[in-house]
Image (cartoon, rainbow, N blue to C red; front, side):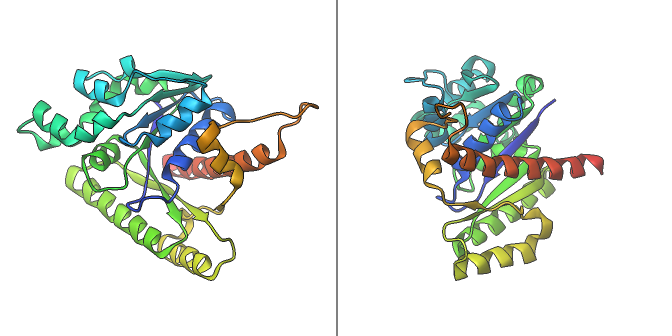
Amino acid sequence: MGSTYVIGNFKGGVGKTKAVTMLAYESAYQKNRKTLVIDLDPQGNATSVLAKTGGIESINKNITNAFNTGNLENEITPIMENLDLIASNTAFRNLSKLLIQRFPDDELKQITYLRDLIEPIKHKYDSIYLDVPPTISDYSDNAMLAADYCIIVLQTQELSLDGAQTYIAYMQYLVDTYDADLNVLGIIPCMLKPGGRVDSKVLDQAKELYGNNVLQTIVKYQERLKVYDVQGIEMNRNMNGTIDMWDKKAHAVFLNVLEELDNHQEAFTAN
């Protein structure tokens, strides 16, 4: 059985989708792990980036079909070696209506439906990453209750820290209420202005609150990461066969993040 990870923060624009797509890419490409991304955000940003990564112009399979039919496996789109995607689409904005229609008198079934859908395919993957909208909603409920671990993306701004705190508190509420087995695997700090007074202050506050849960690796702004949103994730090589310097730098950061998260997971499983 592989592990399922939900990546979140209840503040938008902090880099959640970037973390999902880059960690999934490093998992598949660098670690040779069979990896699946499930895009639960109707905006479909992870879907867009990964489709470009795989050179795919159009994806007909999607998460809405999976929720309607009760089958995830039929909606899997291969992106590259070791990396698959279950794409999102705008119709998934009606998730709440879909769940009520399917389970009209069973709230528990409504919020654990994704967990039930993942179960038959979980043995096929080493890692499953869930991308969700930054809201307290059926999206976050289903994702958290389907996940084994929660990874939080913290942009070093005051509102992002508030969003992370709310996210952890809500996660704990679900754990306590539904007896879920879910732990915070790590908090990824993302800095827009390394060395900035506000950024440093928020990072220090996060470390005081969450200690070693805050990763040592800091994701700093890189233009190449922005390019990946437009062109898809790449690992280009120069004429002499060496990896492009800027690609190498961008991927090295997320490989370090993944290795830190691996270490945290090893510590969890050892206890």
